[in-house]
Length: 183
Image 1: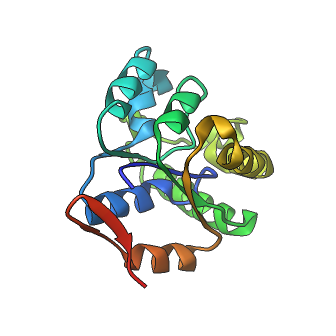
Image 2: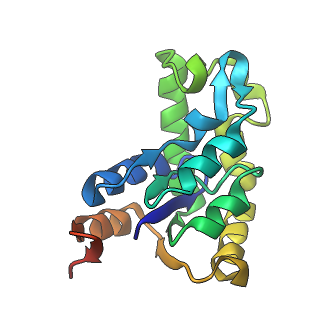
């Protein structure tokens, strides 16, 4: 486990888990949204492919992403492990709503200095609407990719509940050059 994608629906907790894994196995964590969003008004990074290509050519990394379309195949072809947060829609929705409400109410700055606003809640690409409308599609896409021969061999760790993720993380450690899951 040296090149890891933590995949799942919007709001699943990919960033939180990816950071925790990175701390446990001592490999660099890269937040995909922070790389993809370059500035105010959700300005996209025109060099996203180049930046992700450079990072993912390294010997070890963790990204918290299924992958933006322009870098998805690149990341999946270079990954050796997929940690899939395959949570139910109710779990996802509780998490994404709690996060977005806090971001909106407290005007928390996120990628590129942006903030979620009340007005954003009425757009189709707001995280809450996106998580609701894309849950089934994202789940099917990840399942397909996990068995796609283009991306073999991948070690797929499919976690169906937050409890399963906590338990898996609690037994994940690194010893020298090797990552192990200790029963």
